[in-house]
Length: 61
Image (cartoon, rainbow, N blue to C red; front, side):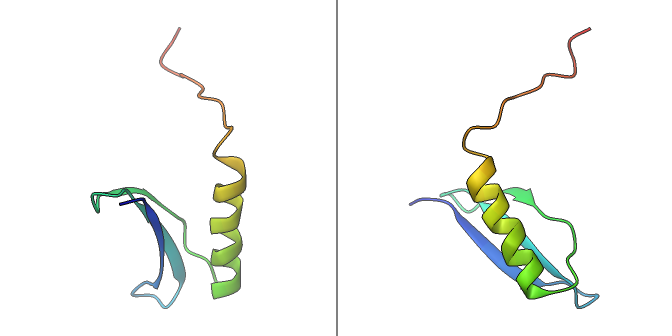
């Protein structure tokens, strides 16, 4: 099974998304968005930008 984004309203009635791996584990969660449309745009941004994103290891001195 592949991963999926879940869009939901939090306790403060703000919109958030979480990314779940195929095994159901949450691997990322968003900030709170004021609107559902903004949260959907956040998902689209991750889908577009994360595939080719570099890894910056900030633990190296």
